[in-house]
Length: 358
Image (cartoon, rainbow, N blue to C red):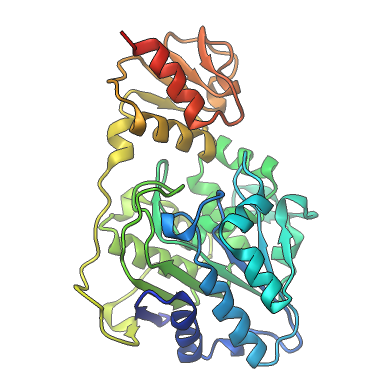
């Protein structure tokens, strides 16, 4: 089993540098090879909101690899369907980091792709992720409305073009996430768990957990993160599926965790509140994209009304018209539908307001 290096604090840059130094991470870079940093930049949100990787993680990585002679360093990412990557990178402060260190940022929505054989069939993956000498996965440990958690493996979904992201949702997420993890198999992962939102992947309810950790096996690090969040293997099955597909080993032991300092407060990790599950008890989700589903959850969270209607969302409802409220253009056949791809949380909230206002 691989070692997991862990550090407590709030200074993302300093914590990243210490983790990389402790792990001698430069040894993972092939001779003359490039380093591609893949943060979590799913939406145009700030790291402080619990949604995106802290810019200090990028700064620490760039400084460390530069000090060890790596010249070809880049930041690569593609935000989720419905958001603009460059707007998101500016919101997270990555533009200032890239300018300061003269490091290019590549929007993977505009990247060329190559078809790769995976456990679930052929998948189009962005070339900059495939061709990196060392792909460094920089996820945020946080909650997710559909998969309960997102970390190292699911963060790799940003290495897909939008058409493939939609295809992943049509396949049900669990198996394709696992297959992508086995296909890309990043050899260095640094998890930003300073203040991830443990309920919503798009942030808004950050929980100060004050830690980061590093490893070389994305499957193991996801299993460790799942344990921290108090979730069980059956709650997040894509982790063991990725192990079955050859992506890594899920097993870890407390002895594998090497702490570089003491916790700043209690070492106990807060648990998700299960808000998304409660809010979506009347929701019939069938192959919904993450951005669309997250907008619905956010609208339900902000609603002042008890929503009693059945709600339908996802590609699986295309052409069908059950009685209730449809979310997104996939549900345009329904009598009441909030159009958009994805619709905004504000648009969904307006429809709920009109329907339930007395």
